[in-house]
Image 1 (cartoon, one colour):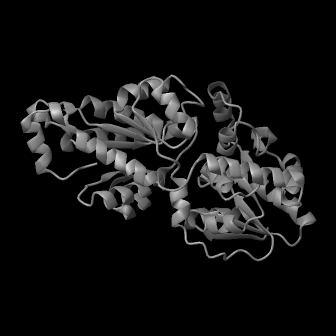
Image 2: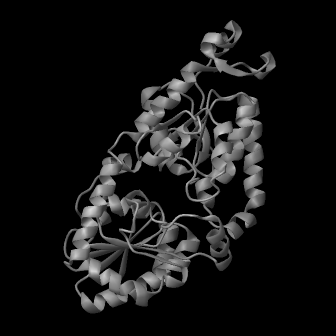
Length: 387
């Protein structure tokens, strides 16, 4: 999603740019030549990544060979640190300028990675305000561009199609493993809500038809309505949401909807994570607020008996609900407003005009244009800008 908005913004500012890379259908629709659909193989967790390692390795090596052949004017990496930090390091060694957009969560775990990133990139473009200071303190050229979710929300066509009656949003995640682990407990909570609020309707936005079929199969006889996409339509009308930890928690916060956050993962993943992750909260709304404004129910705590009382308190007109709405408004204010994608695109294009990469057959190095060779400048002038 963020990659697609970035590609669109770059092509608006530089229509001659040639963008290609790894991602998903949204990025292809935005104008990027898709070399590999990584979004179609979305995985999360230590064991899951290990199982997919041969596939990931093949994609990585193919990408390295492609960078060597094409010598693009810039490599933009977006989050996905296990893959992208290695890719950035290899590209940097080839003399290709590297921009890292959307920082890995070094403030949460493996904090020493920040020094590896610093050695591997020419510029960091971060989307959380506190990240800029963190990188600049160690000498990294870093700019806070704002959060791209605002761009996505601004583009949405909101019709108010779900605004009749009490609506409860169900957001169990977009991955198969998340739906399998979280939807059942969400529906148990929903059953409890129906006993107190029989008028409530429950809607689960799904990313595609495959996930919609999975959600329907898991729901059984529970009257759960599903829609493909339309997440922002649901958030516009929702009284309350049950949300899997992830991007959806911040989206829900930006719409000012009271919620609870749930997460369950495989026991091995959780055991490893407990030893690696060093933050008090997992929800971005809580991290940005610096305190627990949204209840979090993780692993064994993510059971209907624990969640239901918190849910009912936030659905009803209570002081707790009013306080959360105010707290979420403060979180939204901290992130500014739209324009992150355009600012990120501008910074990338600026780097491409102040850096030049000499062909590897001419002794390939990266350097400032002012100090570069005339031969290197000629090579740049003869080609379209390639990202």
